[in-house]
Image (cartoon, rainbow over all chains, first blue to last red; front, top):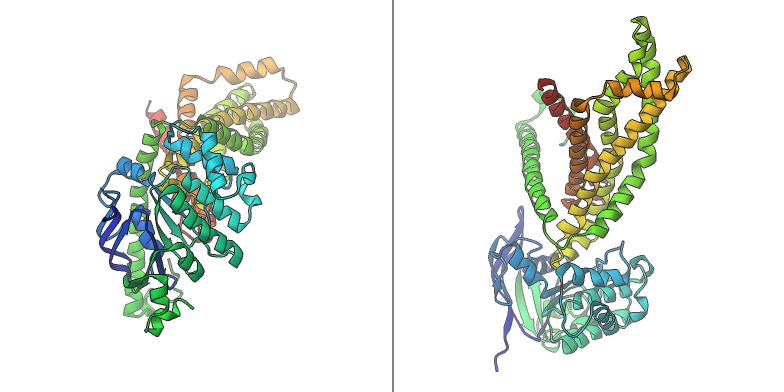
Length: 244
Length: 273
């Protein structure tokens, strides 16, 4: 049975002055799929995910997320859509003037998120338990390590029960053990929350553990697609080099 | 803009074209900035009326911003009153108009010096602080994180601060005026023994509605623009860490200039009335 398409991108272009970053990207993401995007730094991977939630306005092309045209939708519609799409930033982007509890409560309160089964406090505890950091509930972001910040940021993303999660280099700057744990966590989250995800990564261990398929990005377009095993054993040295 | 040390005549064609291009970009930049500020203002004003209202954040920001500038405003007001009195006393004495001194000080402080000096202090302390804080939130992607979760940062981060400065700055001006009168009272007592009642009677006898109303209205506008410009500079900051400093700096410059422009407009209007 064909799975539902949750993200559909056609001929996406984005330039910054004379620098052409995205040059006709096409992408389809299905419900429950974890798609990895690999490529050199500065090639436009983060620009692509930011276009999906319209943090960056694309120059041309179409982006449909959960059936909504992201490029043409108005402010309210975009806000409603964004509540269904979680985004994990490279540095976590925790609100540093708020405790962990307040960080998690903030999106619930501001979006007036209603869960019939759980009170906000229960939602916070459930999200923190999902990332294994219930003990950190009263800490401030400055008291947390890099790995803990990413986990808390993930918990904050999960609290609104998104249908899609965009991970922007979830394991960057973490030691091998912690990045392995985060990669496992991404898999667990897919099973627990039934999410689809785009995972931008340079960490091949993360790509192996957390993704179903991987796309390699080069010069603003995808040049190859396949599973970790297919791409890492490719006949082309240039492709294999990404997996060293 | 790049600085060219050679006289314009000695620049080659390419350099001249570059100077022309940069000059055009600089002036275009000012108009683009102004246009963006107008749109930003419209968005912020709209957010002020959209729930959920952030009462707690408003009170927190009001307390923080007011508390941060209170001591400086009060000391400056006191010194201004003291100095102004000591400077004006000999001049008025020459004309035998010493009894007018409390009234002159009161009118000049309430109408002009109190609001403008407090406004400039707040531009330096509050506007730059807001600019740097929001720019740091932009650099660390906290604003982006709010945007992508649909939590409307313009309402939470900006509208609450703009509202807070709109309330706090007029209150600070009242304190500055009060302490300037206290300073003036002490200075008057250096020259002659004057009772508090007599001083206050003379001071307030020269103050009318036409002094108080425009002065209050202009401080409300000062507060609004101090918060707005600081927030705008922070909100539109670049991605690098240097943009935090730049935002703070340009917030001070732009809000100080805005204070003078608003003041000029009010002086023109009140002089016509």
